[in-house]
Image (cartoon, rainbow, N blue to C red):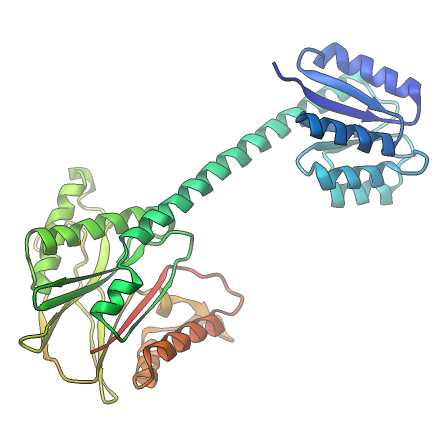
Length: 388
């Protein structure tokens, strides 16, 4: 068993010997009890154990010591051992010294001299237990963060690459800002013959839950469009809704876990644009004139008898379309901390219609940042703009 270290620092040798004896009787089998007669010596011992790869679990320090007081020593020790528990053990500590140690070293406890053995042992046991719990939590957190970063790479891999989007839509922009590392919003694009299909989806939740749902949504779109060759937007939504019913168990069918999806199909030969929305809209702007279609009330949740409408438009030059999740319009901010609102977002689209895709992205991003100010982002944000 690799023993960890308890370091005791006091300028009185009799105190050190007493401390070491009492602690050894209880912890000798699991801990190395090391002593130092000054703060400088204590720092040297810390460096020694760090070089040897030994964990210093706990430092117990006196306050009144020559050259370096106990709070000063603990502050220096804290710089190299921030996770180590610290106890101030003294009969002459000032309130200022204890406060200094608490604020700058995350002091675990102050014990006055003369100490009671039972109190000392129980305090040390508690400090060791807290150290081990903190270490376990930090380790688990690192694993979780590593898994989330890996999930981010997976999610990024399934999104259309910027190169592919530029080939399909030379003039486009994507404003994609997850609330957390991974997102419940996603976009999907595919060329199938003379048709180009683009989708924007807003899944239940955000973070890890939303990211899992986004992968399901991505797969449902692949199955409907790539595998089954369904190219009509309302039929794609209908197929997705039927397919997701098979994802959930019978008990989950009535839940609201699912996604909101906007799908646009562009037929280059017939010069037609068709749209269907499961609770998500589309904004189509031609020469400053806005056509806003809300989308249907049914989401993609596996509900029976869900209905999705198909909307068709002639494809004219200089048409700008916008597909988006609800994160932008629902964001709180501004002087009065209110939602941005859907109407303001539509007005923003109209105001930037004639700008280049790069300029539109900059305007969308800067407006969001200025509106949000110092408030927390409440949801994933996705806005996709395409100039046809």
